[in-house]
Image 1 (tube, rainbow, N blue to C red):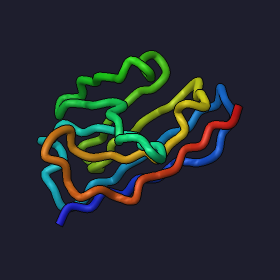
Image 2 (cartoon, rainbow, N blue to C red):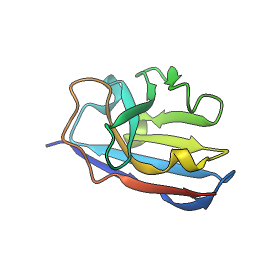
Image 3 (tube, rainbow, N blue to C red):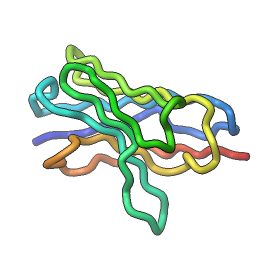
Image 4 (cartoon, rainbow, N blue to C red):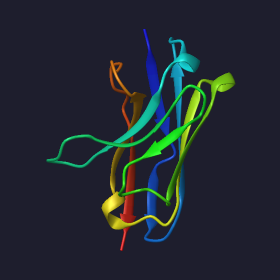
Length: 114
């Protein structure tokens, strides 16, 4: 059974930075396109960034230039470096595959104060 364990969230002031991590166990991690998503109450979960098995990233327009997704296939871990955070980045952040998603982990809460 695949397990996703997100961590690294917290409370930060606008303009600050956070680095999220997600450890994936129980799957062939290195073969998958991985992604970070975020969700705020009352809204659908949205895709923030993806990274291919070879490390090619792609970003939502709202985070382009501020967020960086990366992966370490040896550690089965995907990261999200978030800089210049804005209050609208607040939400619960999840990692998962880009398609054929696994059961969702608990996510990690990011709160950006103005």
